Length: 154
Image 1 (spheres, helix red, strand yellow):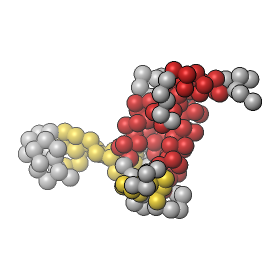
Image 2 (cartoon, rainbow, N blue to C red; image 1 turned 135 degrees about the vertical axis):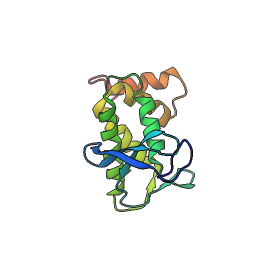
Image 3 (tube, rainbow, N blue to C red; image 1 turned 90 degrees about the vertical axis):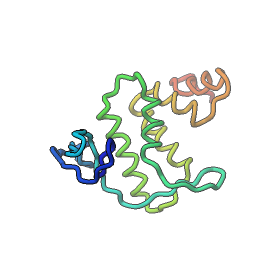
């Protein structure tokens, strides 16, 4: 593993332990050249996924992009970081087990929305505001009113 500080390719593993509900391995590493310490994670990747955008454009699935958007939605919410990591790993496992390597972005968005709705309604609304491209306060009002039992439009 290359040192992110000096570029040395001969780093040493100092500690390994299971992470993210035993679906990843967390390794603490040390660089003998510069003395830098850093952490890496190893995960099983079942297949290379390709995201098919609504425009038809295709791009490689990027776990960090998914993680970034979920963490933005969860910002300042009382959810443990480990719980967020488990949620992200669960979403990725679900995508990998779908059987197809080409996954429409709409499917990914719906899975994220479904998962956030179960965990935190504020994060769910935040994510929805970007995913559904809310343009005005009325969009928020309509969306939130659909969440409230008994007030949804029939």
